[in-house]
Image 1: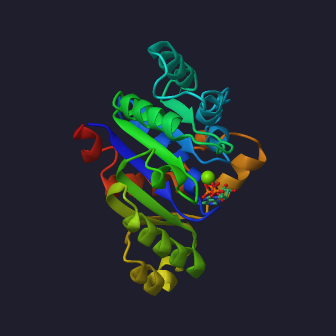
Image 2: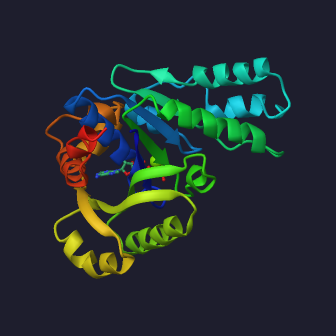
Length: 257
Ligand SMILES: Nc1ncnc2c1ncn2[C@@H]1O[C@H](COP(=O)(O)OP(=O)(O)OP(=O)(O)O)[C@@H](O)[C@H]1O
Ligand SMILES: [Mg+2]
């Protein structure tokens, strides 16, 4: 069974960073098939992964916005073919970019086809890992209907944690079917978790771990190298590894496919 893993949380807290480091850790651990999806309209996961994107799902949706349920099978097949062209293959995982939202008009039918396409595509993989934007558009529109693990990410501020609490409420209020929800606190320094303990408790979220403020992340950015190539010694990588083990991703989790 395919496992769907996604992130949520307010802007700039470290969601894309976590997804990038998670991908890096999972692919080196086992022979597993992974589809990584950038569902952020302001797509930048490709950059942290060092991938060049040629076309996005939104562009294909825009090209096919006039497709109707009554249309012949050939047009539907060509729509599917175009969607397939958005799928990039890398040695460790396949990669799909959803892209910026479409213009005005009714996209119900193409969106239904997209939903079907993503479901069928997802079945080919052990893991589908989704970088969602702060507004969780695709999750609330149910383009992505099922999530096995949702990591709600917060930075080390009280405001960040309270926002994570609201995201938690939002997820529970959605129709989306989310199995496990965990909190990750990023940019931590000594005593961050201790001073945030009360705020964290109030969110009702289970804290699965933290990712310390890592100077190597800044340095990687400054020298213009993809975050994906962060050196092994990075404290952030070790922290992500611990979180994944804690969540059962890569160990027990991937064994249960
Ligand atoms: N543990 C960390 N240590 C140091 N810098 C970090 C850490 N985590 C993230 N950053 C930095 O914080 C910034 C925001 O991170 P990131 O892009 O991952 O956030 P995001 O939640 O995906 O943002 P958005 O909502 O805009 O997509 C980036 O410049 C990133 O390099
Ligand atoms: Mg991001």
